[in-house]
Amino acid sequence: MEEVEERRTPEGNKMNGQCNSPKASPNRTSLKTLFDQDANSENEKILSMTSHCTSIFSFTDPSESPSQQDEKRHRLIQLLSIVRTSKKPLHHQVLSALMEMISANILRPLPPPSKPSSSITSDSDFPDEEDPVSKFCRTWSHLQLVYDILLRLVTTTDPKTLSSYVDHHFLGRLLPLFQSEDPRERESLKNVYHRIYTRFTFYRSYMRKAMTNVFLNYVFETEKHCGIGELLEIWGSIINGFTVPLKEEHKLFLMRVLIPLHKTKGMQGYHRQLAYCVCQFVQKEPALGGVVVRGILKYWPVTNCQKEVLLIGELEELVENIDPDQYRKLAMPLCAQITRCLNSWNSHVAERALYVWNNEHFVRMASMAIEEVFPLLVEGIEKNLKWHWSKSVRQLTQNVKAMLEDMDPFLYSTCLDEIDIRESEARQAEIKRKEKWDRVFDMAAAKNNHQFLQRRSPYTCVLSSTINV
Image 1 (cartoon, rainbow, N blue to C red):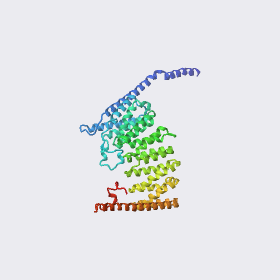
Image 2 (cartoon, rainbow, N blue to C red; image 1 turned 90 degrees about the vertical axis):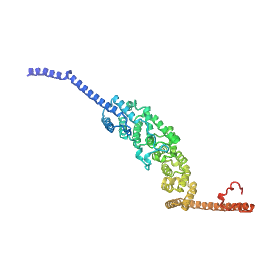
Image 3 (cartoon, rainbow, N blue to C red; image 1 turned 30 degrees about the horizontal axis):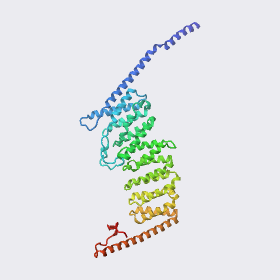
Image 4 (cartoon, helix red, strand yellow; image 1 turned 180 degrees about the vertical axis):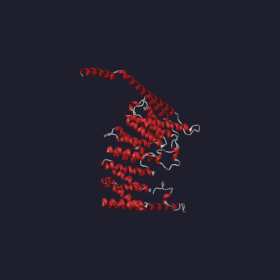
């Protein structure tokens, strides 16, 4: 038995030696070669599809073949599927070809604006356009897929690898595309640009400066740009990530860019995004509230009632976030502007200004400087009750009057007495002025022995500036 076991042991060793011998390596080598061949064939397939998608269709040329347009769209869908499902990093040749195809399709000159003389801001905010469909890009069926491919590449590819293609030159050509009149393209572009800002941290300073230049050019030069709202949405996310205390660079952006954006004619198109950005600054540093409020009051519109309604709402939101220590300083300018608005003949402006008094923060601010603001408020309230044409405005004014009387009944009655005295003095002054003008006309008539000057209203007398009474 021992001899048999001794014989079996060497045989077992031989079998083990055969299993561990290098004779199996050719199989492994051939398998690796097979995988490499499959990867090369896959890369060649992608390169072929990418080359086909580099051709551009205008969708307006009659000579273009619809079947070729459909073929390009089909290949773009295939490329998007490959990019989405790829678990390994793309080969540098494939990545280079994809970026070349993306640049050829996206980085293009935009068509002239449909209304070159108008102040364009955002088509989606003006639904009453005669033909909003004409704003849409005809090539969007292709562009949408290209933007999706670019977004996927930016999201999944290592920024250091992609930085060879997404550089300052690429970003500089990408930013003007925000002037596209197609809101779908601006939305896709916003997602791409914001994702680049998020992942490519070494480009952030450059991208902030580039967007700031667009804002400044819009405010002080052209007042024509379709993508201000989308750029402000990106800035809203950027401001949300600022650390406290804020850097001087960011405070200057608030004062020199965001506040002047309130003065443009097309502010209604991007006010929601602008108000969010400004509110983010005040929430992070409430001490900036005074600067923002005074800046908005500086650019208050004179004849644009829609802007007035929007700005009243923004001021109300700012009062909720500013430092309460600034309430006393801001009470007088804010209450003066709100009073002018509630006396507006436009019922929408007047009603919005009256609704501000439902805000407890605004009421608390006014109460901190009650002796200064009450005379102004009471005069505006009484003027509305006597003269405003809108019944709803008069009803709201009555509600505000009841609230102010509850705050300080004695001061309210004192202000009413002062108003009566001023009105009485004004009536007496008007009577005296009219008597003086009557004497002037009588003297002129007597001097000429005829009714050379007919008795007429002193307001139309052309001699009023030369006769010294």
